[in-house]
Length: 393
Ligand code: MLT
Image (cartoon, rainbow, N blue to C red; front, side, top):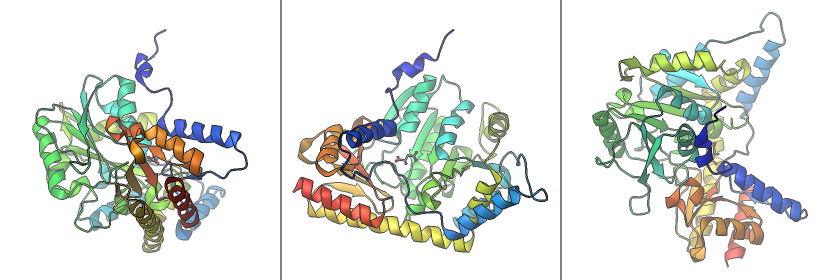
């Protein structure tokens, strides 16, 4: 038999699996030391009370013959689609329900969406960026071009008309750098994509962290985006759903390529390969969008933002160059003393028992940088930053 040879081009393991393995090896060798994580962007606050209540109520319904439900509608329950539609309306974006697909999270959809595109396409990926974009395309053997995100361009690369690509990835607020595109910058990407007939895969997983009211939360706030963009969003970071699993993807009907509707293709793909998100999870997600749920989720985001501010202050006091942490839960710092990203990872693990994420794991341009997440508890974050201060003093 022939297996997919493209897997040979990948790193042996996924970035966050490598980090976990290094942490576990260290913990096994030093069982008395408490390791603190500012590494993977995993939330630590529990689900908001209205969300947990809706989740439990729906689980109880499933235990009663009168309210039990089997397979749900293919694109998600109408009650949740309508809430997502209402959320977009609050951003001045009008979406028909048919464009909204409930999913089990952004990561799966970002990979699965590639089913819509031939492997003989060129992909343009910012560097550094969330490694899932690169890895999933490498698995299919697509040609990959990179758009360099550097301190000089504020980690916000803009289109270069000399680069010809069919599929473009944008992540704003950006993972890992925390940079956020302004409207006129996103407009340049939309214009470029339309001129090339390309499709933008827009990852909005961190939009809830935007504090500056002038910054766009959705690509559909940009004129012309419906003809060229698919948006993927997640409740993981907005509402603490990393373990619950729920997100949504918007595929507008205006998106036609090669005479085919991408919306119709995505429905065909999802109804064939995916059986939807469980009813209790969708009820929990619905509760996120109620006034009480939204207020509670915003409160949690504010706690993470307070962590980010504290982290910023410590890095500032150490005179370490860094960015992010304002409209994003990630701080992106230069490794002190000219260390490489993995050297600094090891240094922090051994000297401070703190885990972060090496910037080089997000791409070549991430070498020499390091990412810290603000998703810890206030106590652990304060302790981790104090340990970092002492290790670097
Ligand atoms: C990260 O740390 O980059 C994210 O938590 C990964 C993810 O959302 O899959």
